[in-house]
Image (cartoon, rainbow, N blue to C red; front, side, top):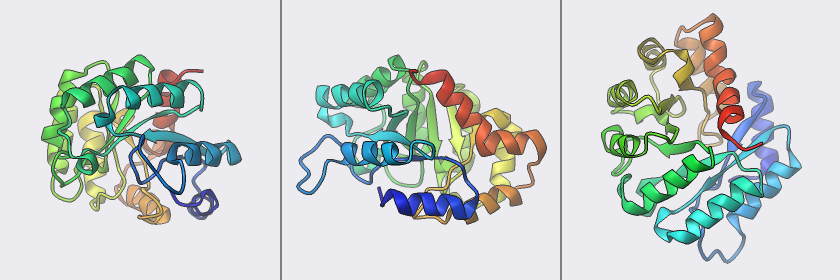
Length: 233
């Protein structure tokens, strides 16, 4: 995660009220300079009205990962789990991953998955996880990236526990396609900032052509309802 002040400044420029934040590395682990989970927790405490934390974890750490997830959700106020299977090089339906995702479901915490063009992250691979963990709420970040958007929409059609997230996917018309296929309540705006410019990510949704209540749902109402429904009080 970049400095929280940078993130809040980008939110202000784009007219975004709140954001989900996480680190670039998978915990738990041996980090010389800082504790990534503590870093996110401190950032969220500094800007409690602007930032929500998700715990980016490595399922391969087994019980340690599950214990850390429970601490993040139960003690530190994090709202969900982030998984990037390409980073820790495990299939999305590996035994370790299934256990961690099922633990998240028991905690009522949504799971944000990198869903793009890399190994272990393509929608048809993530579909195995969605089917194996039907009680988990899975958010496919980037909704398939550059080359797999159609597959992401198809998987979400088949798996009602899957939602699609708009960031870093370059085709505005595909957002409208997802809304048409799934309903506006299953598509979530995100920016992937600072790697992507949040202002441009907002413009992408605007250029998709969705309007009115559908636009409002995608741009904020859906994530607010999701976290209110699934996360512990």
